[in-house]
Image (tube, rainbow, N blue to C red):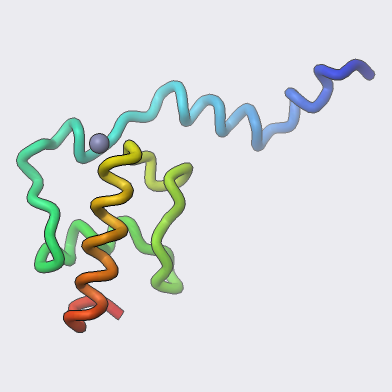
Length: 82
Ligand SMILES: [Zn+2]
C-alpha cells in the first residue's frame, strides 16, 4: 500500500474524468440568454430540493456558474422559482 493507493478511489477518478472531458454548456452555446426570466435554463442547475448545483456537477466555468447563481437568486426574489 503506497501513497498512490488513494488515487484508485472511484469517486476521484470519476471526478478527474469529468473535469477532463466536460465543457461549459453556456460557453459552447453563447446565444443562450441568461436572465431571471429564463427559468427553463435556470432549473437545469437546481437540485431537487431547489439548491444551486455545485460547479463539479453543473460543469460550468466559473464566470457562468456565478452568473447562473446570481440569476437564480434574482428569480427567487421575483417569485419565478421556488
Ligand atoms: Zn462558460
